[in-house]
Image (cartoon, rainbow, N blue to C red; front, side, top):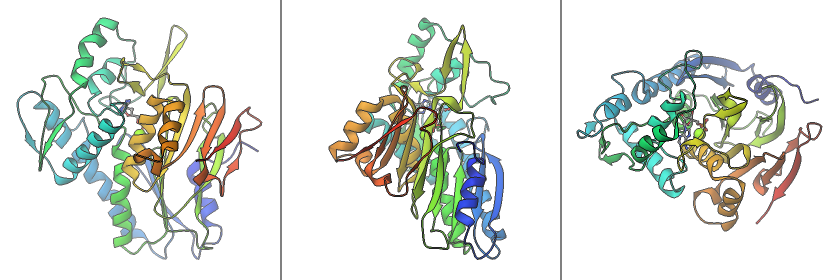
Length: 350
Ligand code: AMP
Ligand code: MG
């Protein structure tokens, strides 16, 4: 039984089976994606309005397309000097830089010119984007713009080189989850499932005291096929990155939207998808993208080493060959669903 309800509904149903009241689901579009907050409370109306307002505020700060956003102003000033930014923008840029440094630039917040060359930039919606394979000479010109990270000093930020540009598409949605949690808890909601694009955060546990459970998508499936079901404890975030999310085909070759900053091409690291479960939603989001670029051997090496940020997370790595590595912290509550589709599963321990 691999075909199931869409993830959000499924999460809501599973989590709601013993709820005091029916959950209230608020769905909205922000940060270029569909978001939903499923709250379990007597009357979560104010909390849900506050949650959506929090995301809209961040979208207005972090969008590349709104000319007055912090990120648009930072990009417009590239090579000319620093711009004043909101404290939340400075904090996000600092986190993005930290992941970039620790990942050896596998996560790269200034990859924007290269992504635009492929038509994956977030200046265009998926329906109007013109995808194309850039010439090597074009990539060779753009790649030097991706080597210097944004400079953050207090509440100012700067890009050193003209033509540089920031795109926070790989981290902003996860980062927003923290603000949604705050908005909900400040308005009396103690139990919720927050789904911001590929990032799902659990606030509280189910009314029966067990953790919420969420489906992880089958990266080779149709969108309603699932690889597994996992428990998501209170306060944790599950972020998935996969090439299937945005891609195009040219001359029979599929090109996807997660770019390897080393060569400017879609990452071919041997992975179909990476799921990260972590306490910090921004780090879950950014590292799912970074580990997709780094590949299974490097991801597992970092996790097994017991040192660094990745070691404190749990991972689900799906290889091109259909092998699924699941780190030991996710074993309890794991339900595998992809055997019929040819997946094999392995619990990784240290
Ligand atoms: P995610 O779905 O979180 O993995 O983020 C994918 C998005 O991050 C893409 O649509 C791009 O906007 C951006 N992106 C692609 N490759 C990278 C990379 N290597 N580092 C940082 N951001 C990236
Ligand atoms: Mg990400």
